Amino acid sequence: MRRKLIAGNWKMNLGLNESGVLAKQILGKVKQNILKNADILICPPFISLSQVCGIIKGSGIKLGAQNLHYENDGAYTGEISATMLRSAGCEYVITGHSERRKYFNETNSVVNKKALQALNHDLKVIICVGETLQEREDEIFESIITEQVTMALKDIPSEKMNDVVIAYEPVWAIGTGLNASPKQVIEIHALIRNTAEGIFSKDIAENMIILYGGSVNKDNAKEILSAAGVDGALIGGASLKPDDFVFIAEQAAAVK
Ligand code: PGA
Image 1 (cartoon, protein in one colour):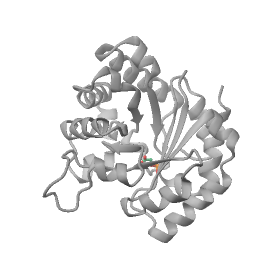
Image 2 (cartoon, protein in one colour):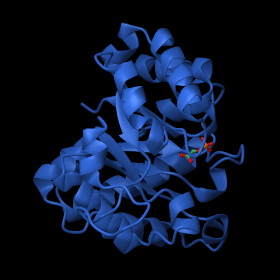
Image 3 (cartoon, helix red, strand yellow):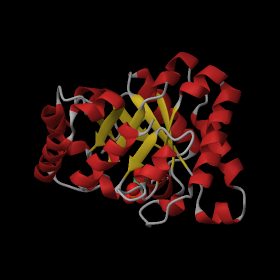
C-alpha cells in the first residue's frame, strides 16, 4: 500500500526568518489525522534547513533539500554534500528538477550520480522527470521520459528502491498555471511504473511512490491526487502559502 506524499519545494525563496515563520505556520495547521494517512515534506533553501529542522522536530513533518553534490567532500566551492544534508536533519533530497536540468546543466547522468550518492548516505531521493512543451508537441515525450527514468535508476540496488520517489513534472506545467490533464498524468505515471517494472520487478514498481508536479494548487489538487497511480504531489508556488499547502495535504490524506 503506497502512502501519499505531499512535498513542498520552496525553491530560492525566503530568508532565514521567513523560512522559520512559514515552517511554524505549517506546523500549526497540520493536524495529526493528516499525518496518519499522508506524509508531508518541506524542502527549504540550504541555509534554512537546520533551523526548520529544529522547528518541525518530533512533529512527523519531514525535511528535505533541493539539491546535493555527488561527491563526498572536497574542493567544490559552493556545493553541499549528502553528509552535510544528513547533519542538517534532512531525510529527503530532490534531484533532476527541470530548473536544475535547464539552468545548471544537470544531465541524466548527473541526476543518476546524485541519486546514487543520496541513497548511499541513506537519504531518500525524489527524482524529477518530465518533458518540455516542444517534446510533447513533437510527440517524443514518452521516449524522453523513459530515458530519463532509465538513466536515473541505473545501478540503483533493488533493496534501495524503497527510498526512491519519482516526480513527473511536465516542464510546461511548472510555475505556468497550466497543468497536465488527469488522462495525461495517468498515462505518464503508468509509463514510469512500467519502466521501473522492466528494470526491477512488478513488486518494486507497484510499491514505488510517483508524484505529480506542475501548478498543483488548492483548486486542482483533489482531481490530480485522485487520479490512478498518483501518490502525491511536488508543489512549488502553493507550498509557500501555508493554508493552501496544508489544504492540499488534507486532500491527499482523504483520498481512498
Ligand atoms: P509549481 O512548481 O507548483 O510552482 O508549478 C512545481 C515544482 O517545480 O516542483
